[in-house]
Image (tube, rainbow, N blue to C red; front, side, top):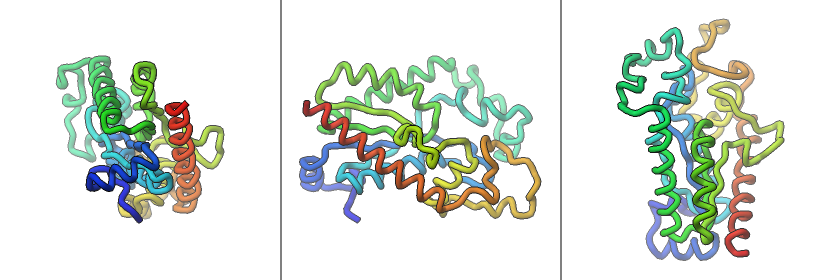
Length: 252
């Protein structure tokens, strides 16, 4: 496969590829508990690989994934969905460190910081002459934080257009593409995209035990590489088509 990661390309490779398809695919994620069977980087790992596949199929670019900067006291399993402290206990985390007082910023302030970071990213991609930018929000709350920034940027700049969405936003109303948290869908996605980051066998000796931090259909015995492959094919094609749509808007 040809190079698709922007940071790995030589100047002449960038110029030649950009001339044909000046689109950037950028994954957004973070580090968060995704059950005992998935890597904590699931959201970003999933988004990163899908962006690489979309770049390969379209002729565009996979830009470095944004792993950091998102709010850490809202929209996070460790902070908001661990009432009994099971996640923190397994990870050896301290509850006091997932608080507004510890970070020194309110949830709104953390969201604002992330939005400023995103806007800076969009302008940077514009300076690199990317005409279409497709963001894949592997961590689903990011979409809501990103949307106001996308709208502001698209109104301000006419030579670059941005779209932000989750996997299923690139395949709307498709029953074969869905989302959850570390359950059937996310397990199947990562199992196909990064099998080295999935180990469902951690549950083999605990078949009836409730899963910690898994929201959605129990992946045990239901998630599969094939479900992930079928869905990811559709997601990638949806991303490519969205990039083409954005390019048409810029050219018109």
